Amino acid sequence: MLTNYLLSILVWLPIVGGAALLVIGDSGDVRSSQARLMRIVALVVTLITLILSIGLYAGFDNAETGMQFVERVPWIESLAVFYYLGVDGLSAPLILLTTFITPLVVIAGWDSIKSRPAQYFAAFLILEGLMIGVFSALDGLLFYVFWEAMLIPMFLIIGIWGGERRVYATLKFFLYTFLGSVLMLVAFIYLYLQTGSFDLLGFMNAPLSLQVQNYIFIAFLLAFAVKVPMWPVHTWLPDAHVEAPTGGSVILAAIMLKMGGYGFVRLSLPIVPDGSAYFSGMMIALSLIAVVYIGFVALMQKDMKKLIAYSSIAHMGFVTLGMFLMWQIASDTGAGLGMTGAMVQMISHGLISGAMFLCVGVLYDRMHSRQIADYGGVANTMPVFAAFMVLFSMANAGLPGTSGFVGEFMVIIASFKANFWYAFLAATTLVLGAAYTLWMVKRVLYGEVANNNVAELVDLNRREFIVLAVLAISVLLVGLWPAPLVDMMNTSVGILIEQVGQSKL
Image 1 (spheres, rainbow, N blue to C red):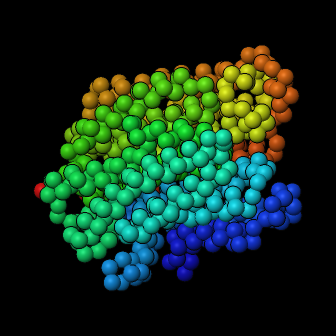
Image 2 (image 1 turned 90 degrees about the vertical axis):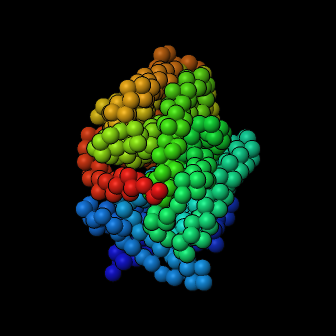
Image 3 (image 1 turned 90 degrees about the horizontal axis):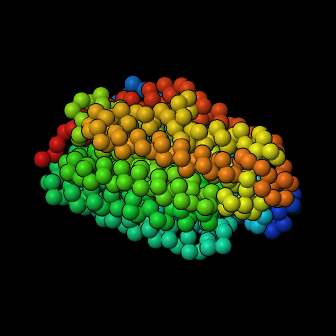
C-alpha cells in the first residue's frame, strides 16, 4: 500500500514538516528549549524521509524498462495536466542522494546557525521535498512548478543566512536561473500545443522538424546550462557558494547542480534527439572548456569556497561531456559508458563536493575565515579533521578507490573512443584537479602552525565527526563497489540511448 504512494510521501513529508516548523517557529533565542525542539523535529523528518527512500531502492526493479512507483491523478483537467510521478534508473539514484545529504546538512547546521533556526531548517526541509519533486515529476507543468519553487527556499537561505555580499549573490543566483527556466516553459507550451498534454513521456513521441528541435534544444539548454552551470553562464555559482551558509553550499553543490544534468537526460536528449545531435559538437566544446579553463581558474583562488566552487564547475563539465559523446562514438557500448559515467559522476560529485564544503564549514565555524592565507599547519592541532580533508581532496582529484575516479574514468574511456584529443583534454583535469586541490591542502593543513588562531583550534566534535565519517564511508563505498549504482542505471541508460538513436526526421 505504502509503495503505491511512496513518491508522494517522499515529496510532501519534508514540505509539510518544513511548513510545521514555520508555523510553530522559535522564540528567537537559539539556546531555548523551543529552538532545540525545532532542530530535533527537522532531523527526525529528514531521517524518516531517508528511511522511506531506502524502500525506493529495495523495491526498484533493475530490469524494468518503464517508469516505476508511478502515481497519476488528474490535476487541471481542462488542460490535461496530471499530478504524475514516477522514477527510473536515471532519477532514483538522484532522489537517494537528496534524502542522504539533507539529514547531514541539518546535523551540520546544528550549532552554527545563531539566528532564526526554525526558519533555517524549515527552508531546507521544503527544499528537499521540492528537489525530490523535480526528480520524480513526469508532467511538464508539474516539473516546472517544482523547478521554479525550488529557487525560493534557496534564495532565502543565501539571502538571510549568507555572508556580507549575500544580497548581490542571491539576486544573481535567482535572476540567472529564473531567466533560463522561463524559456523551458515556452518549450513546454509549444510541445503541449503539438501533443495535447504535458506528459513528458508523450513529448518523446512528438514528431518535430529539425528547425523546431533546434529551437527547443536551445530553450532547454539555456535552462539547464545555467543550472549545471556550464561555461560561460557559470559566474553566479562562485558568488552564491562563497556567500551561502555551509548547509546552503552543500545542497547547492551536491544536489541543485545535478538538476541541469538531469534535465538534459530527461528532456533534451529523448525529446529532441536530432537537435541534440546537431549541437553535440558545441556541447562537447563547452564541456572541455569548462574542464580545462576552469581548472586553471581554480588554481588562482585565494578563498577555499571559491576554489571548491570552480572545481565543481570543472567536474560537472565531465557530466555534460559524457552525455553528448554518443554521436561521436560508433558503438552503443561506448555511448552507454559515457552516459553511465556522467550519471555516476553526478552522484560522486554530490558526495565529494558536499564533504569538501562541510570541511570548509568546520574551519569557518572556528576561525570565521575562508582565506587560505589565514591557515597553515592545521594538521598539527586538528589531526582527525586533516585525515578527512585529505581523503576528500584525494577523491576530488580522482584517486582510484574513491568515487571521484569511477565516473571520470568511464567518461575518459568513452571520449577516447570518440576522439583522442577529447580524451587528452578531459584527462588534463586529473592533473589540474590534483594541482589545485592538493595545493590548497598543503597550504591549509601542513607546515608549521601559522598563527595563534590556528594554534588554538580544537579538533572535530562528535557531531562533526559523524557527518564527515558517513560521507567518507560513502565516497569509499562508491569508489570500491560502484556495481549497485551502475546496475540501477544500466537498463534506463540503454533505453535512453535507443531513444536518442531514433531520428524524428
